[in-house]
Length: 212
Image (cartoon, rainbow, N blue to C red; front, side, top):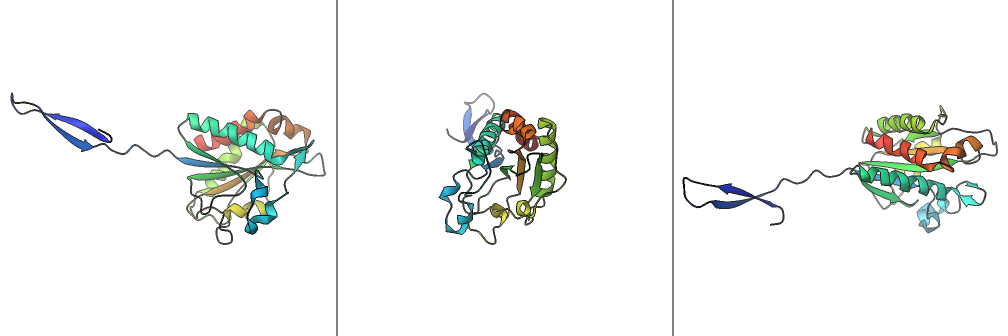
């Protein structure tokens, strides 16, 4: 009977009459996008050609490999809780829509002592929800990983290309709140204990922010 339910109606001792009524629609699962920063950046279109070949690395492994590991593990955690999750590459589908978009990246520095994570929201947020989402992610990630939080963000984070729907076709729809996390420094031994050696903790921190 597809999307119908049966209602059994009786009148006195006569035969039962069966009528059908449309079943109420099931609640829509929240759609969460986890972008693995720099993953498949070599496929970037001309408008995003600056993405090709960038990102940091550690001992011959590219940043995107660590970002993807964290994103996939966080996605699995969220799916077990009923969320609809997309793991996206560097190139976002045109005017992509979701209930929340999280770009996952890692930092790098010539200074091996540079360490810590940071979270930023889109400067162009029109939803009114990105700042709150960034605050929740910053808190949840710190609690899950024990890493130090950097008190500042960068202009590049707040102006992340995927947030810039005015300039790029491959970007978020204005109705999608976007945030970005630099999960730690690949060039720092303490941060690598989490983002390289124990990505489940980084994934838990990312997923916990959604489930909070």
